[in-house]
Image 1: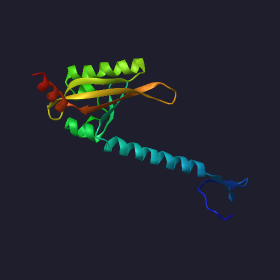
Image 2 (image 1 turned 90 degrees about the vertical axis):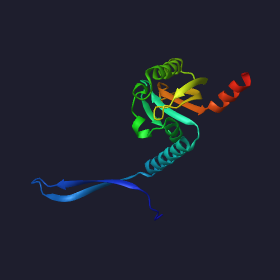
Image 3 (image 1 turned 120 degrees about the horizontal axis):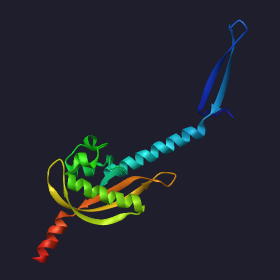
Length: 171
């Protein structure tokens, strides 16, 4: 019908008995579905990055060994750090030992139970500023396509003002 479509092609040189080239055999493959899948994956990744980094909620994506795979812009700003300085590092490299251990114990509970842990209220010391705040945190397991837990997505909101207001009401 004269329409264009993406192809992949391979050329094979055909030689005679003396090793001299006599022809080229070309094979063409329609790769339309592969290109569509690549574009869908690219669009999905772009949506993920937009949501992950535009959200005011802080996100930390961690593996099962307590290494931070990725933190979003809100978490980086809250922590007072550049995300590139944290990504790939263990919580023990970033936070005070006691705080890192508490984070990891919560992570292990989520990993082992395969269930979310929500509504965690905790004091948090930002590594880049030393500022201590109150956060409400949740953690959910991250699964691969086989159903195995590959990590934890932690998310948090700063509730320092709310905690202070509640404390003032108690006084």
